[in-house]
Amino acid sequence: QVQLVESGGGLVQAGGSLRLSCAASRSIFSFDVMGWYRQAPGKQRELVATIISRSARTNYADSAKGRFSIYRDSGENTMYLQMNSLKPEDTAVYYCNAKGERPPYAGDYWGQGTQVTISS
Image 1 (cartoon, rainbow, N blue to C red):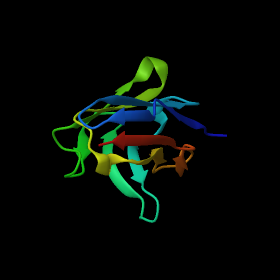
Image 2: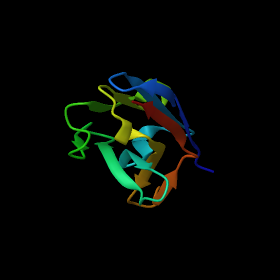
Image 3: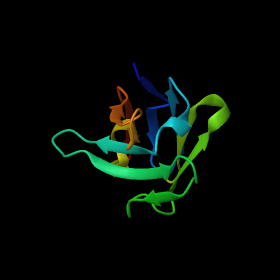
Image 4: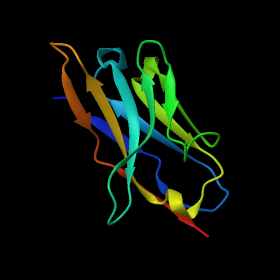
């Protein structure tokens, strides 16, 4: 029943910017934590950034600090990842994740992914 739909991926050159969005089918406040992950071909999925839904406290992977920003728009039930100063190593499929830790909202949900390709 829960749907997360990513959009905003594409092809950009190194040094450019891109904004990813994740639209949720229910209030983002029904989740405890939301985040972005990425997976490059042949590699493990890795955490990029997370945001605590209620407080908006954020955490970033070292590779994302200073370049990426995660934020939310509760009125649109949408979470965003603003990516600046992109590098070829940022190339991956980016996935939206939402996690609930308490019933009746307990669960771990994923979007379908959106491709980000950075050319050098």
